[in-house]
Length: 112
Image 1 (spheres, rainbow, N blue to C red):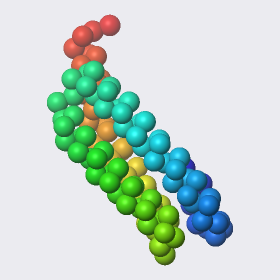
Image 2 (image 1 turned 120 degrees about the horizontal axis):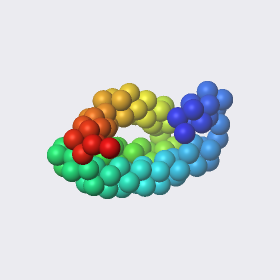
Image 3 (image 1 turned 60 degrees about the horizontal axis):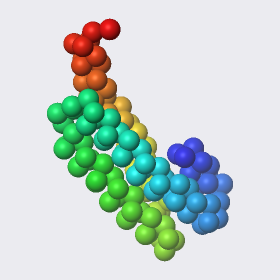
């Protein structure tokens, strides 16, 4: 999605293309977060409430950007691209790593 959005920005794709990407992203974020939070609950991840707050913050940001894109506000597509980049870099590589570590530690304690 990020690459597709980046390509749309670089080539000056029409507004419809950007909105199509955004619609996909809205659905993906909800589905992905629901699965991720269910998994964290399943493994007894103690930081689940804080992680849910991070997900809620991203949903709010993405929905706000959706509204701005829908009104074709200048810079909104670039802002979305930056948000996604920072989310990948900061959340997935840092915050999500904590529940992965928890799951691995839990597996070690249970044994094979």
